[in-house]
Image (tube, rainbow, N blue to C red):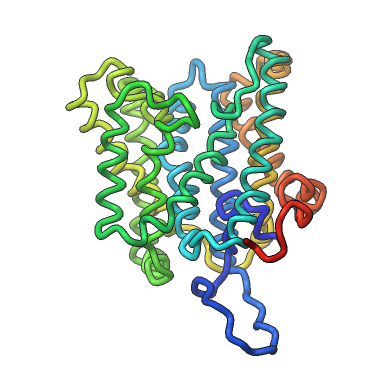
Length: 365
């Protein structure tokens, strides 16, 4: 089933219907549920931003405009993924079938690719890097975080003020040094509010975002965001956007640190809403590529890091020119599109959506 191969909904299904209810005692087969093209479009467009964000450091030196674009992308591309992950987790209750899909669609790919990325880093940059599955490498942190967030989904359904509680947890994490050790907990907790917001959203909220006045406002938001980021880039460290360390570990006291984290959270929320408002709701040529985002996510890091470790990018100094930067972005978009195609999707299926029926009891107990 293709739903296990998607980056942000590796467990739940990306469907138009409401969360699943217990089946009735009828022998008639259930009506097929159609995929919602809106979420496939959102995932494909967001994965392009991820790839661009990872490619820009290759050419960011010496260009304030490139740094501003890099900062803008990092301000909201992961909040988009986390929010949509939460929305597509609304039906998660920990049923045996859901746990099986969680293990085969998230945990197994994490284990396999964490080892693969560790081998890549040992070859290219850190020969002594240990195999440590509790300290995710490069892009692998998101799968581990998704596993943790998904397990907590039922909890947020019984809390009276889930969004407020998640915001409190994120705030405390942002001023607690040393959290980014095991499983990258600093990022897990700081991105948690977006997952919980997604859990609380309903289809009507997305319909509201896609109303014409909101879409016009979204265009204005992005029109103003890039020049603002260009102005602010000289005074803001990118580490704030990575969410890997606490405010104190960046040399800022807890009180002003909380203020900065709150401002960044507000900006990320506005940009995320603006992005989702501009996502097309109808089926387009790239809609089906949304089902292959897990492949693009897992594979593109090998190309970027492999290129850096091997000195490939250094062989083309013209990439540091304005025209070269444009070429790099366009090539990145094209390569990520290819990695999300159905052909790659089918090729990767044994490691991104294995059935593994042999590993589970038939009675689900």
